[in-house]
Image (tube, rainbow, N blue to C red; front, side, top):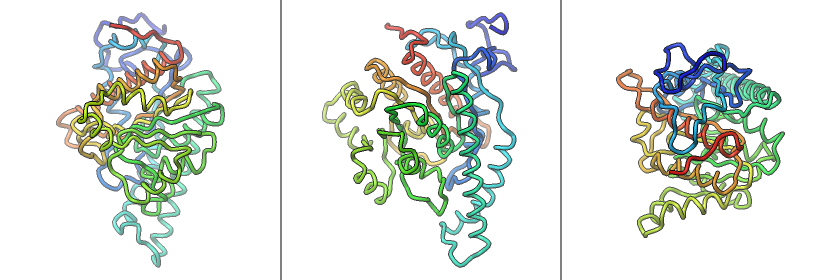
Length: 352
């Protein structure tokens, strides 16, 4: 360890993620923050998610009732890139002009030029993430990404798929995110899973959970991709629970659809909106925190390997009145971390 560390003590204000003292060199799991929200078209603030989660993480007790001492595997958060933040701000300003028209920009050369700039900036962000996650993988680190909006993990999934066979994605979200170039933006947060399926052949399976807000185009796309896509619609799962099915049996069904190696892509709005009231596009319904955690546990207990993950769309209260969204985000981040480590034999599951 880089210094004497008491896991039972209060975290220092200048400590690392979860109050930990570990350096990049020591860490086995490394988080990449990506403060980016260029194409968000409803609520904003997700670019502040990584910083808010860092601050809230220092209040998370490190002893976990699911995975024994995950912090002992040594966790480290990389510093935010100011270049990412500044490019994201510039792209968001340009995107706002297009969003104001609903993406109807034909015949307006200045807006068409703005769209080209936004798409170019988002492609740059993808390359940045791909490079950084590739660097972590080459160094033997377990990669994790903290967004930002849900467009941010494309480069991470691409980097992992280049190195990992039989890769599937467990996608927890309120939205299908399979729109084609939403509002003209090739790399929209609403198109992340369409782009993954269309551009990353190494992803063999997409399993979506909690989806409850989607358009007809997305429905048709998912129906046409049944060999690669399995969707557990929120309405379907709620109906089954009301008819007496247990969440344990539903979780087993979800896990059975997953291949051995999994990247978890977790949009915080996959949870019930009371856990994330300030997220960009909250939707009624969704998973309980405990249900999401149980699903991750079921995947690990069934022998699936979590090769990495992303957590996105955590947006702090813009008025600064409370830190509930960040508090929930930090705790879900710790659960994702613990289960990832347990799946790779780097932490032990605690059986109570």
